Image (cartoon, rainbow, N blue to C red; front, side):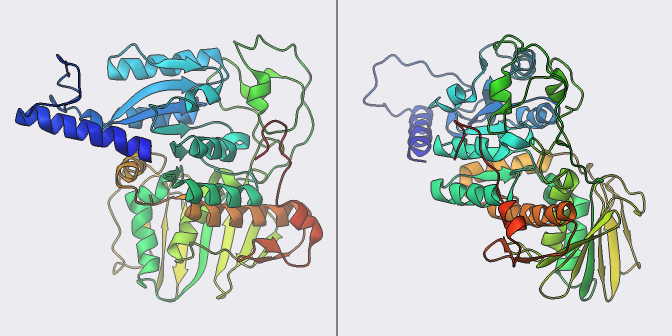
Length: 433
């Protein structure tokens, strides 16, 4: 923070002095300053520009990056990725958008984090890396926009939140639907009593999955082409197979569903978004349900105040992916990624379709504004902690095939040693936190 403030304060002071015609002391003259650096021609001045780096950018990350590049106060300066083809693809995307040719490429993310000029990073690696990457970035003095799921265990959710607080890091989890109008409207109906007393909230999830087998071993690629050891990171070692990472391909990677790489048996693929919205609708940030159980392909949870959370893959009204539904004594509302909202009666005003729920436009802007103001963004690490922990607890109930009781204050299971052992995962050296 001291480094960032000093750099920005200097540039602000310098720009103001130049604009006012005041001599600047302590500099060797002549000094040439570009109009772009001073904020001319529609550009943000250098003092207000966020210098951004990217780590592990592929499908979703490339989509996110496009919205960062659209912002006038962002300059993308470096990409770190274990795959050469992806490094080059991101470099091209950023340089074309910025009309520059100076985006640096790194195979090892630690070289990017060592740069003193980088203010923030966009982290869009696979699940196994998200919490570690955010923690390493915070230790290096960078703010973090992290794709979700942001941590693959209950214990990592705790470590993530505590580290962001310790370093004063601005952290935005990629659960962008809190910044999408139709979801905000539905949550506000619940939060402000328009639905009466809320008794049930519904969150959409994928069908849960659990795979532990290894794919057949293939010859290791050249490290500069694809660094398999670095791709694995803190996950347990296993032989290389290109299907895990879809090397050189744009399709979704096949690591999903494998316990070593995935987050909560795929529970958090959508649950990270939808359970988060249910938590927000209930004003339950900072806590979680206290009991979890499975019935068929649905997961259930109960809050201490008696409100029921139902996590289900089917039975929705067809309003797009990641739907949620909130039911109260005076009515209900359901909405999804299409932007459409259906309410139980006309007195509950709906909203016209806005951007799709997958669109991070306003979420990116919220993050950038908070990087400058040092206020907490809407999906900060504590918000993410609560919703992710709820998903992890639910997933462990499914995996163990029994009802689990949970203490939100200690984030431990009550009288269940096996479930408590599964609250954390071992890190492969040297990635122990």
